[in-house]
Length: 392
Image 1 (cartoon, rainbow, N blue to C red):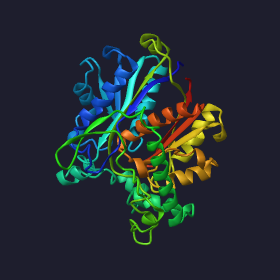
Image 2 (image 1 turned 90 degrees about the horizontal axis):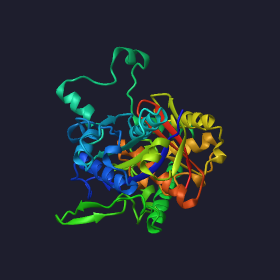
Image 3 (image 1 turned 90 degrees about the vertical axis):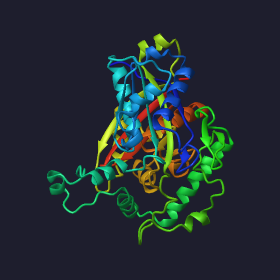
Image 4 (image 1 turned 45 degrees about the horizontal axis):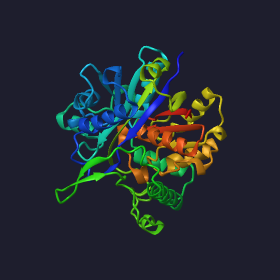
């Protein structure tokens, strides 16, 4: 089997709900990162074998194969195909997996993987809600599924509370982790760590004026532990709040993945090698624990231990997810989400996997580390995990 390399990665800043990026059409926002990625790598458009984009709420402006629509909205030629992937919150990490598998098999040489979600326009769950309205049925009430899980209401919010209870995380534990996420994101932003990975985006101000956006809008630069501790819990007698949950976000990211033949075509050096890939299916009721078995599998495939990994990106869907992951993997929390996570930077659903991988790559390069690990929990109790090795 051949190799899979990352030669370029770029993301937009994260736009907060109804923020400066709210008016961007998803295909145009996707096109923005496609064009930037191609320009940065020096690739010719006709070299691209495929574009694979993650997108969760494939409804409204995000329906009709948003990956292909992003291609048609970009400077890429019509000859470049595109396909959209839904593995829930891990959709664009799955896009990276598919791209890696394509170039490893040598059926394709140069593939762009990424994702986009403009949640201000297409809210989370809108494709499901629209189905209810139109009488097209419900996704979770098939006879087999209801027989297997009688009386269960599948909910990521309930699952996160279950995780907090199982691992005995207190409200204070979660608030402290959320506060640390903002503090790390502030430090990274003020130190310019995100500048190389972010493409500037023209945003809309409430006044109607335009402004170039270069900073993730979700970061609370005035955040305090006291303010987070004062937030109302999402459920009665629960421990989770909006502060210890990921933020609604508008954003896109794209990564170019190639094999050895692709490197020769492009005439450039690889920035990282994809070492191993893994998936996991876990309890769909608690739903969010999948990164734990997925990470154990991906480490085993790479013949590495958690101590060999320099930094980890574990999506902060809810604070208990990375905290439980770190506990079960016996991971060093100082290496976890070192520049903050989705509680501060936002979680653009189908775009998050590529967004995190972009940050992971750039941070590995900045630190001159060797290995990075990424894992994402997903609806339905699945998870993706990946290890990359920095080469330059």
